[in-house]
Image 1 (spheres, rainbow over the protein chains, first blue to last red):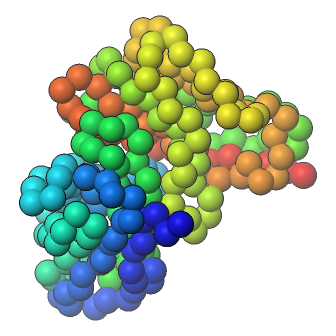
Image 2 (cartoon, one colour):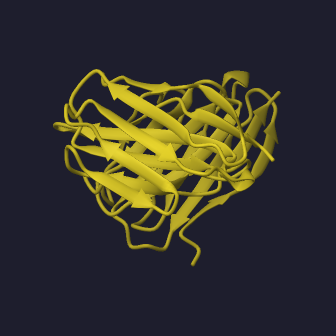
Length: 113
Length: 111
């Protein structure tokens, strides 16, 4: 029962480097999300994909891009990493965009030096 | 945008005590969710509420969807050490189908 799987779990980058966080879900969910979690800030939505082929900005999209590769996979890319992007990133999925319950991955801890 | 105020920010309690936390919204919600996050893990859904006034239990946890649709409460009875973690409320309302999360309540249970 994998649920939502994220890779990598840990990553250290230098300022200006690029990287992609991968996410896959095996629950046949239509909607997928990327959040970041920072101390005292809770979970903030970066981008989401209501269904395959669509993506939309969330609350804090600047500095990120996403790709909904297929129904299972939703990746988050940092083109030029900045220290302000040091955070824990969570991918989540739900049955559909109005389906209430989100299921989260275990998180990817990113440090930008 | 929608705002959620979750309180308290943190709690230190003794094992066996009951715990109560709540979230209030600046607007009406039609869904309330409560999540728990263990250290180093992703949030896990505890209870989902879909109707005003709804009271739902999951073991020692009980959550309620407020009558005004602007608040929700989570109670934990007879706390145990494994209850330690961060508890998040999340809500969704109106035509905005994105979830809004509270900032979390950090619970510490002393054995």
